Every structure is written in C-alpha cells, then in structure tokens.
Amino acid sequence: MKKYALILAAGKGTRMRTELPKCAFPILKKPMIEYIIENIEKSTIDETVVIVGHKKEVLEDLLGDRVTYAYQAEQLGTGHAVLSAAPVLEDKEGTTFILPGDMPLMEYPLMNKILRAHEEMGNDLTIVSMIMEYPKGYGRIVRDEYGEITGIVEENDCNDSQKLIQEVNSSVYIVNNKLLFEYVKKIKRNERKGEFYLTDIVALMHQEQKVNTFIVRNPMITMGINDLYGISIAEKFLRDSINRGHMLAGVSIVNPETVTIGHNVIIEEGVWIYPNTTLMGHTIIKKGAMIGPNTEIVDSLIHEKAEIRHSIVLDSEVGENTTVGPFAHLRGHAVIGKNNRIGNFVEVKKSSTGEGTKAAHLIYLGDSTIGKNVNFGCGSVTVNYDGLKKHQTVIGDDVFVGCNVNLVAPINIGDRVFIAAGSTVTQDIPSGALAIARNRQINKEDYAKHFIKPKEDK
Ligand code: UD1
Ligand code: CA
Image 1 (tube, rainbow, N blue to C red):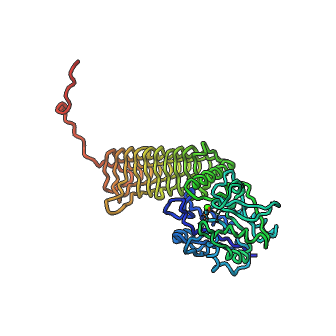
Image 2 (image 1 turned 180 degrees about the horizontal axis):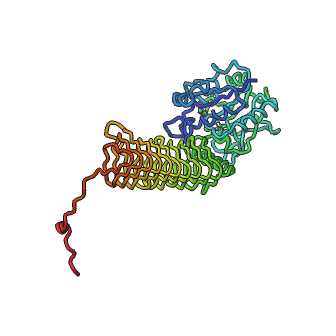
Image 3 (image 1 turned 30 degrees about the vertical axis):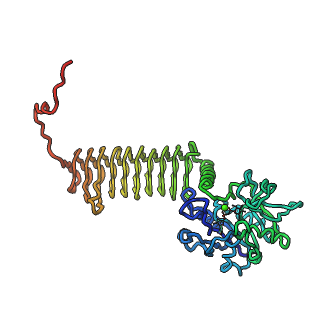
C-alpha cells in the first residue's frame, strides 16, 4: 500500500504577527516546514502533498519540486484544506499521513512507528493525541464510557467539563485515503467560526469505521506552534536535544543553555564549546578544537585543535592548531592555514594563508593569496578596493610586513621580502628585497621648543 503525507500549510498564522507565513518561519535558522519534509523523506512515506494558500510562493520557493502542491485559495479551515487536496490525491489507493505544517519536531522513527501501529491495529483512522498539562488552545479528545474516541471538540466549543480534558488532538491523522475524501466531504461548517474543521471527521467516522488513537509520550514533540513564544519553546527544545546528542558523542559544552547548534553541524569528539556560541549551517568542527566563548560560526570547516575565541567565522576554513581571536572576523571564504595566528581585531575576507602565518593585531586582509610564515605587523592592510573594483594581493613565503603597511593592490610581493613599517607599497617587490616606501625622516635639532612650552617649576 502506498503511503502519502499531506501537510496543511495554507493558513495565515495570524497569531504569529509576522510577515513570513508561519510554516516558513525559521527555527534555529531553518524553516519549520523543512524539518517536516526532511523527516518525511527519511520515513517510509512514498509521496508528499503540501497544501499551500496564503503566500504560497514563499513555500513553493522553499520546497521546489521536492513535493506536490495542492492549492487552498481561501482559508476556510483544516477540513477545507484537506478537501483542497482532492484534485491530486482523491483517486489514490493507500494510507495518508496528515500533518499540520506547524509541528516541526516529530522525527521519522516516530512517523514510521505510528504508521506501523495504524496498520497493525487495522484502523481506518488513527488520531495522534497527547496529554497536555495545560491543554488550552488544543482540540480535546472526547471518549465514551468504554474509552473509545467519539469526537474532538475545539477549545471554543468546549463546555466546562470538556475544558478539563487533558488529552488533546495533535492534528496528526493516519487515514485510509479513499475514506478520508469520502468523509471530509461530509464535514459541515462550524457555526461559531464559520470554518470546516478536520477534527469533525472523528465524529463522522467512529460509528461506521475503525477509529483509534495513538498517544504520543512526549507532548513537546507534537506541540503546535502558533505564535513567537511557541517558536522560542520549540527552539529551546531543539537546542537541548541537539546539544545532548553532541555531549553524548563526546563533545564538552559549557553552559549548554547558551550554546546553539544547528541541525546540520558536525562536531567530532574531544571538541570543547564555551558559552554564548552559535554554530550554524554546514559547519564541521574537527577533533580537539576549542570554540568560544562568544563565537559565531556559519558554514565553516574548523580543523583539529584550532582555537576560536570571541570571533565570527562565516563561510571559511581554519587550519589545524591555528588560533583565531579574540575579536576576529573571517568571511567570504577565508582559508587560514595550519599553525596560524589571527589575532585581535583582524578581518580576513576571501584570502588564503600558508602554514605558520601570523596576523596578530588590527589587520585587514582581503582578496589575497598569502604564503607560509608571513608576519603582518600591527595595522597592516591589503588595500584591495579602489572605489570601483576589488584587486588581488599575492604575497610569497617568509615575508615580514612592518606595522602600518598599506599594500595597494593589485600587487605581487615575492619570498623573503622585508617591508619597512609605515610603507605604502604600490609596486611589486622581488624576492629577497627590503622595501621602504615612505618619506625619509628629518630631525630638526632643538626645534621642538616652538611647539612644546617648557614645564614651569613648582
Ligand atoms: C488545530 C486543530 C486542533 C489541534 C491543533 C494541534 C482544527 C480545527 N483544530 O488547531 O484540534 O489540537 O491543531 O496543533 O483542526 N491550515 C490550512 N488551511 C486552513 C486552516 C489551517 O492549511 O484553512 C493549516 C495551517 O497552516 C496550520 C494547520 O493547518 O499549519 C493547523 O492550523 P491552525 O490554525 O494552527 O490550527 P489550530 O488552531 O492550532
Ligand atoms: Ca496550530
């Protein structure tokens, strides 16, 4: 039997009060719906249909051709949303796994388990429910005296005793596809809200078909996110679970509640991560590296035993045993070699360095190819921009760049070159040369008295 996923993602997400449609809103910088799709792709589900409507282009841009789309032009409720998928799904034989687009934390092993339970119990409809200490806002699961589910009542339609029910609807339904469309057509408009509630399918089906529940043990996982506070709770949950995974795999994290690590980050064992650190995107941290405190790393590769403190590293690479920071900024594919030192207030953009190079204080390196064992004095700058274009600087091995040197690009500096402090270098320097590009000093003896008054004796 084929398995389909049907994701409800056409709603406005009014309670979010954000421009972005809710299901595209990021959690740890990744859109909510991407978590859902990634897990579905790993599950036993064969095909995914996403119902879009409000700002559909945003979701279509995000998901491209990974899924099939169904369109709900007007947001008339979750039952109406499912009905909008009829053109692409109605004729199919199989089982449909309905998920709301605002429930990103369910992972594929649980999806598979629920699907298996649905089959093994021989259900026509399985409602996934959970027990909530504070069930406010959720549809309540109503059972008869035998404990059989007979309906779901939305918060607004609950009487006082129903409000006390702590078992709630997660909005995940596993249902025989043919029956789904047969019964969803029978759903009537809810008087109070004027919407078609998918939840009404339970009351319609339970006497004629086999309807059961699957109770999820951890209600956090099936929590629906309706507002920005919900986003922060999901983020915290995800952060904790990602951090725990890394710690169990041999990564030391100090004050983990202040450390945020994205879903796709790979960290090898023996790494230390200090407080207020964020690691995002496709970042890889190799064995024994020390990261943080106060560091942000995105889409970067950090090699063995590198040390990065109080710094920002974006789309870059840091070599083995290299130290970065405090207060350094690597970006635009900076590739720093082994045993380098990139120190205080140093920015490196789109440049590479060979082994053993040092840029310890107040330096800008942009659009440069730099060799081995180069030493940059404090305040040296590759002058890469002339107001119109960016130009390249090439520096050989074993070069000494004095303090406050400007290397005006395009420029080539050979090997074993020594550049005097304060030079503004505009011409290439051949290997082995000493370059001095500044005015010769004049000392006017006994002249300072014109500017400095002698101190009066007290
Ligand atoms: C829904 C359930 C509630 C359940 C809760 C779990 C209904 C009537 N209520 O309430 O029983 O406890 O989820 O989180 O189903 N959507 C559409 N088109 C629409 C309306 C909504 O695609 O016309 C989508 C939304 O984008 C969202 C999902 O359906 O992803 C759920 O909608 P939402 O408004 O969040 O429902 P809840 O009020 O949370
Ligand atoms: Ca919701």
